[in-house]
Image 1 (cartoon, rainbow, N blue to C red):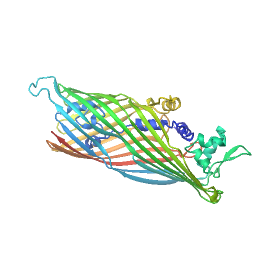
Image 2: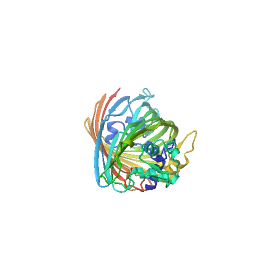
Image 3: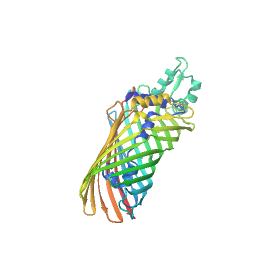
Image 4: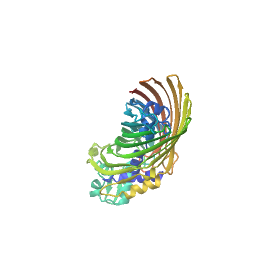
Length: 486
């Protein structure tokens, strides 16, 4: 994992026009299915249960179990919190966000309304959207560094590459060039090397990372019920990505032992948008009334029209106000393609008469299969990094639902495995959920609470120079679904 982050940060520090990294591929390859409150109450363990709108995005055979038409709408307010431990300093922050879990329709067609003996019992068509990922979060990292400064990592790059002073700002327009233009990095013609004031630390480092946006998918599905034993479904998915990142990195001297330098402030802004397409096929088999077996496959998602837009700025402050300066980068943009991995799911559900059910899903996904490409570049280095640093593993979801007259009680648990080939605190995610619902003939309402936690190591810059900030993310989401049958 450490070597992966080193490569990522060196790529960023070089300010290449093509700025996509392996971390970007992972961000858009990980899917944390959202949707209705019932689906989330069972932590998404619906692959063999069916008859819920969210299954259009997981196992579309679930649409085949509908016996009537339906409309659903889900709201999902979230309170997210984060804590970061860096060099013995602990900081925390939180954010409230309002989102939509799903909205959609299911239309039931019964070809045997007169002839009840037909093999094809019903055909169902569904369309709408399901949320697949939520990027809204804020992280604050703060701590004292007594060994070096981010500017020292910049001088290391310049001295290693032996970049001529006249070429620095053109070669690194988004970071190192800004530091050079604001006198944070300077060149000594006598030694022919670059230097900075806080080379040996003595600075308080602070970074605030704000991320916004989501990944939603429009689903167009078809399902069929064959002899009330075998159910099949097909979904055409059209996911869309809207991701925004605004970060502010600040260094301030901690004492007068650092000469001249007072502070720096580096601002970075990124916007990523894209629309893709995939196909999902699923099956559910009922060998007996008390058991259901499900399976589904998702083709890789192809995003043919991804675009990144980014810009940055650097501001410096010194004892001598003559050297104070601020500089802005140009606006960078790049169009490219992204392919995210193939997925497969296996599911099992036990139906306990009219009382309830217990279900489980296993999802296989190999994150090393993600790939970037464009009309101008093959992304050989980044794709090689994706292949070596990510792994194939799996995600597990378990859920249960119990019936009390017209009411339902639900609970669930999910585990999303570490996608990295190395590392101990890198993106494992656990989820616990619970909820209740009310079902009438033409109306239903459900409420669920979902808690998630994920740990991740984050390096402010070159990992060979700094300790990681150990970040813990917690999210608390309440899903409320209103539905109508017709």
